[in-house]
Length: 180
Image (cartoon, rainbow, N blue to C red; front, side, top):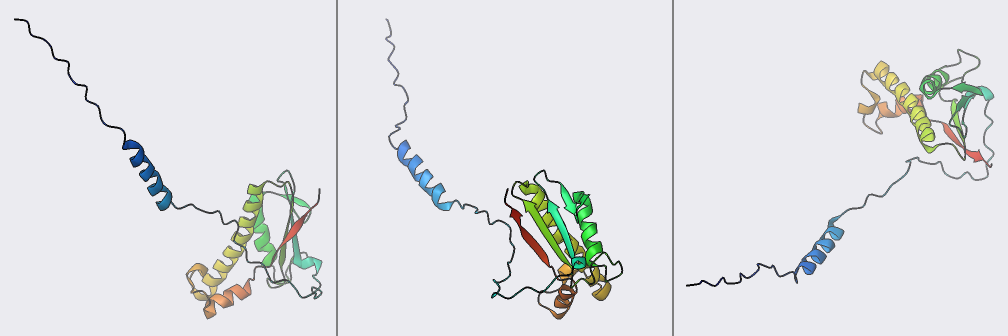
């Protein structure tokens, strides 16, 4: 007796509903996904002046920082490295009239940053970080000397916080780049 082999039925999965499932998954992920939006640099700009002539600034109280198109840094027309910027700013701001070439007081000190339109963006951001870091270190040291606690642990808008912030106000001028 010969046995006939039966043709085995192939095991197939019905794929007609696969497109529906994929579409539902796509809709689900589109709905639940959040998209981060770049916010840029968080700087609070002063209000627009009412056509009032700005007060004169003594040259002594102005620290000019220029970052050229090649990313080179000039502080008062002298070349400087990014590593030296923070110390130079701290010395300038915290002079209190001791050196006649530096600011008269922290309240009078103004740091002016000027760039070229072709200045590398990362150098510009690093420069802003150094300036902000210099002020943060000055405020931290003043808070430690005065109250024995870091400036960052003081409660915002408290009397102590305002006192330290007023001792070292951030007077930073970001000048418009030259056309070129």
